[in-house]
Length: 277
Image 1 (cartoon, rainbow, N blue to C red):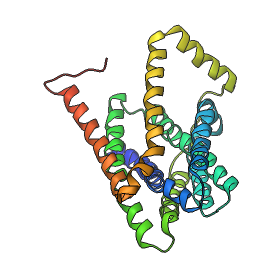
Image 2: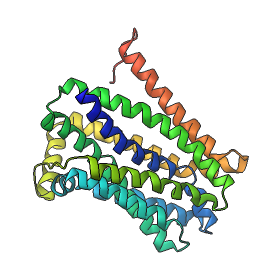
Image 3: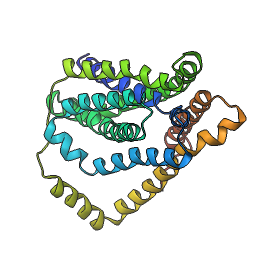
């Protein structure tokens, strides 16, 4: 019972932030084009978000450990909230700032929350490490459902409300507020080892050089991620001329991704015994 209660507190803080993140994806390209920007300008705005995510990702671990993981989770919600509000602007620089803040917030979203959970699970509550996969399997299941629902909700809001394409970004604000307020009030703070960012990056680079398999895994992952990022930019202009509702298409993509994950888990644990190379 103590573990289930702790797990519930984590999910109630984390899942709203994931829902808000998914809401911002389906209609972003359409929103920027409705502001009158050229495709090359939209590509530059996308690149601002990707670049800030990559640049901050190099130091996010040390930053989160030093600032505090709970504070970092709350900061993630705050940065993403400001980013969503800036989507109301028609100014290119304001929208570029929005993409930079979104990149920073997303980097924290996918590092601080899990780091907070692992420390609380193992260090503060001393729960068995074997229970950790149960929590993250629940996160994966809920995340898939939230992604599908977010696509449908973004389509309904973007088509039915007078605000148009910016409506899903405004709809993300209550979820971000819920996540930040709940985490701030109900989570305990924890910290990691305080290390200079340069030292942390140096240790990571030495680890890659000394372990060729880790370097190979990183290169493969980088290629996969680059394909996904290119796809994230191209799918809207490819599908839109055919009159396909973008929110529904987004939901279909995420449902297919969830189905692929489920098939892999079944193949890896069932009779086939599939294993990664």
